[in-house]
Length: 176
Image (cartoon, rainbow, N blue to C red; front, side, top):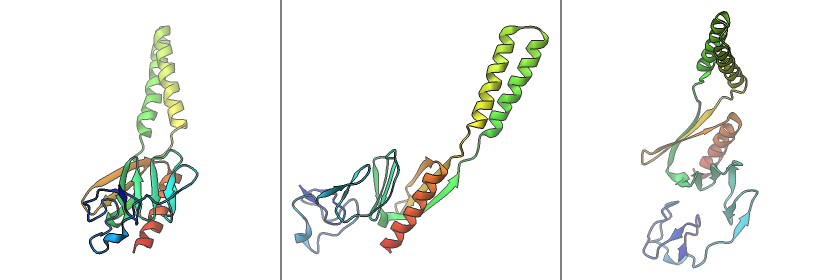
């Protein structure tokens, strides 16, 4: 088995281009290495020798290096990424507030009729609405587009989305 000297991807003997980074092997066949480069261990994953990791989240959903972007288990070559952006996911707070109002309405309607099961249902709906409104955390989309027209979106909290965007800017500026 041969490996790409640029990104360390596994290659078949007949391949002329690396499927990960696009490295051309037709010019210099001797550049193919017989063994995979030594890996060095970082906080959560291993990276190939000489490759800088700009960002890796604690869940392993996203990893940004100087030559590739890994989202879940799908790998994109930085050279093929045409754009990236971070945008806020529309909030669903109006639905949560409607839940509080509905619970409040049911509570007083069934209280007037002295129906305990209805009062309990009203209180439960109202409490769920209050808890979900208080614990609501805004989510953000980290979206990339590739030269092939593919689009991938990952939902993250603000800190992770901002760090991923900064890391993409660093990685893409190194590629240019």
